Length: 233
Image (cartoon, rainbow, N blue to C red):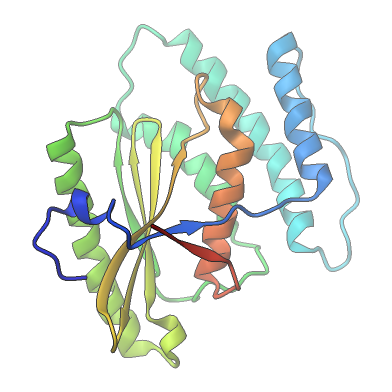
């Protein structure tokens, strides 16, 4: 998408696609509500035991991993309250608040085939919200890296359906999900798919369901699943 306007202006223009949320089973939502009640009551959380199918479904894998994720998230939030007077480093932020979420979303045992042995995306992470100018520079850097990865994918692609790569931009509690693509008709495109909240802090965990729904749609989009996208005008 060639344009004379700034990157920030381009990403808020009408060529903004909306990623529709994924819908989980009732068991997933019930487990998150159970965990949230334990946070409110200050009771210890124990994941619900369940028997997966044989072979396990994608939902079974998620339910198994969700319990572990919620235990780790509890430890992360409790640790943060004990260290509230200390400034969190970028490495600690990535380990404590970002990696546990990414591990839940992109589990290595997932039955979804997300272009194995190929790079399909990258990300930029900032601990605190930077100025608008710095955020625009970081987004531009993300777009440039995605374009290089897209070149590599195109060279190895077996189908034009693979002419996509994906990016994540995290600044403080905000997450932005992007897709970069190429077509003969439109050339290169760098599109914002969704703005969500990073739900792994003591002030943002209430948005956990909404953020997971969008992130799982994002994951399925990477695996060429038919995820609906709406043009925002």
